[in-house]
Length: 317
Length: 297
Image (tube, rainbow over all chains, first blue to last red; front, top):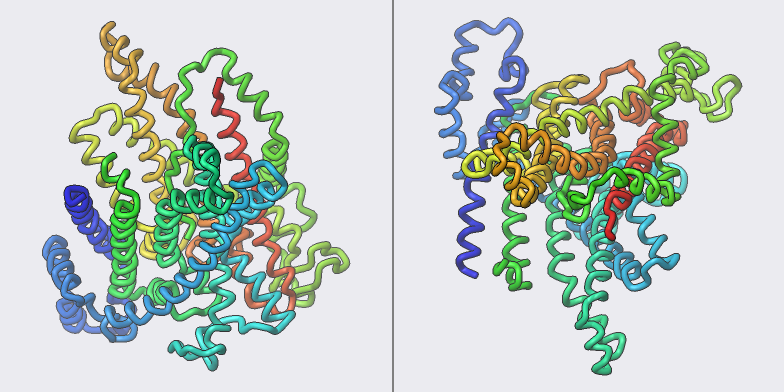
């Protein structure tokens, strides 16, 4: 077990360094001078050189990379070119908003996905199974940004039940535990939940079908266990994998929320990323991507460790 | 969001019993699958629209009219209404098929060749070449795919070529992983040892024994990625990072029509419905292909 943890950690470090390198390279992949957006068009050569030095663009790439990583480890991701505020605090504020949305979406997706998956796995090849399979195919095929638009059309434009965008009344980005704020979360969270729902339901269906076909189930039934008792055994065996899939889905939602956040004007990382791209705010772009990718790498690590703790068979294989 | 996972169940076993009758059996089983056949027909219709769209469309896709902006579905002369610049929706949806499919399918095809090459090289060579190649692939795999696609396009800038490049980079890692794992399996088989013992060089073994057994499963896996690629490619255009106006492309149409969701909501939703239909059809087609190729006897 300890050996497994150690190997997993050692494997993660080079991945993290690689991820940092890709994030760093992104900025230098970008065509044009990153300072163009802040310098006035008639800036003197002296001012240009000064700004270059200020942002560190005048040093060699390896030098820039090492100092960037070193500062990033200490929580300093530089200063946003557009807003002139520290990138780290901007990103963290947005991560909070995205995380809240992604967690609600994962929860909805997990509950519905497990429900459909269990029903489909228990009643294989029945009409219930076909219906659940259809739902999961639709879930993984739907362009979620379009689904978001359709939900806005139905629930905001026609029925006028829910707000079409923003994180709170009056466009405020701060969270409060009240019904008004929750209402703003509902449509984006439901839109977001469709894909994890489809994937979790597919996974759980396959898991349940596999487990039910194993001999120990027959043994349990022969022993005289009730259907509920057998069901508990199926749940116990399916849980580690289902939870792992859920954890990974949370990571995908965190990193992939940009399209949905754009549709709903949700003040999260996606929104920040969008602004960074179109204002060519490279430090902000670099920082946001780095934080999101690191979240994902760490989440992967946690999922692996938790799954191994729940299911000791994995560390032995 | 929709990340590309390498689900072992989605990769068919390399079929060793692939005799002359193999493809006939696959064909027969595929034709028995009604859902898969229906999906194949939808894909066929989309391909016809993509090839012959400009001749089939009733009007000029670029012809705008200030007087006929945002007319409803069923308006005289415009069966699906008009967009925010008064251009015919039906025409733009039909003509847009070509660019939309092109943007979704091309990256998967490019990634299929590059990813298979990397995967087969890594799998067949083994050793440090394998470690080096696959660890590099792992770094790209560590990014959620939507994030990677948007980050790359965001850095490279908007445009068709840049979108194609970033999507290809997104799809190489999963394909390379599948190709590598199948190649490693094949490399350990007796017939490869036999070929080596009889004096065949590495190139000949890869060409004769490895390619034939690896490309089939990898191809089926790649087809299952087209649906994701369609959604991602249109998503980039939807954000303004892909195709530029005034080209007709579904994702871009969805973007420019967003402002109209309160005046003509159903027209604004139409391009997305096309993306949805295309993505379902490719998903079901890939499912059908996979189960037809998994012949267990």
